[in-house]
Length: 429
Image 1 (cartoon, helix red, strand yellow):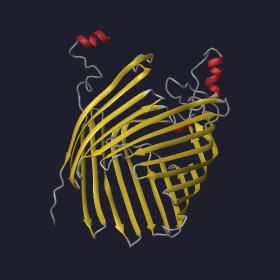
Image 2 (tube, one colour):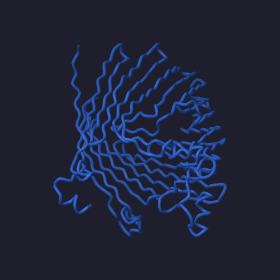
Image 3 (tube, one colour):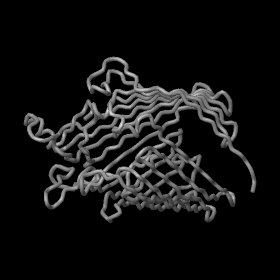
Image 4 (cartoon, one colour):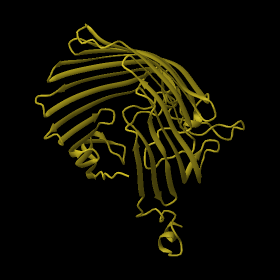
């Protein structure tokens, strides 16, 4: 049949409609300022490709109600014709989907007090192909409050801020997904020293249909989870940080966060860390007999440590080096789910007030991947800019992307050269 499709001109291969085709993008932004600090805007995007199209459009605005209170909002609608995965049937359906996304926020800020409340969400069929959407079928309500002391430059404790926050996340069926309460204190002391600490308690609830198929009562569809179809946990956490400006040329900072009962979603972490769930471990110990095990999320202890220094030898030149370590140790199997070390080296040279040269190098030990960037920028006035840059992406002693086997030495994943220009037209109406 394959030979006939390749040689018979009357037979159309199913992938012919995608070969040598380009996706078409369009972005439109309109904005009208009024009243000094207020604006009303429209935002629209479009992306089309054979068998896939997506259109997003909506309004946003910002209104300063008084000297301390600001209301902002964004409401978007999406229209898509594409493949949608249906957990209830465990199949992908090619259909039309319309969605809604919204963000409402009311913020009140004064010197010694402040509060904010907000509400945001995305409906199940919301899609934004020209942007990034990390989660749909979710709504989140959040609120925060702050009490501060007056700043006193001559006192040992220059300023203290005490913050409290709470959030509640639920899907469009009303089921809880997450809840969180936190309180934190940060202080500014003499000697350009800042200290802060935070404690919090979270609740997380997982549903298997967010990860794949949803099992049915007839047993004809196996769920995405091994064992129970839902998981939940209370997750206490504690963190602290310190920042010290040693002198005008050198500063240092560090932070650490510890949390318990954090979920390992059982995806594994690349080639270096396999899955460590009881279901997967039992499958390996059993000689990999039987079907590949479904996801088996479980909790463990989490730790993240950050450390950085900044050096400014001259007014025009600045260097910074940041290090971050993150790890998750699963409790039920007493195994390490993942550990990542991330190094970032960053430098900036400011030729003039409007022109700069920026370099950046990132290395991630988890993927054994390095990314580098060189960027020149010229911004003579707000809204008018010219950028030219070079990006490089490669692995060192990593894994081949095609064979999934160890790859010694350097392997380039891709490199790009780009130019970006913008010009602001000013016209009064």
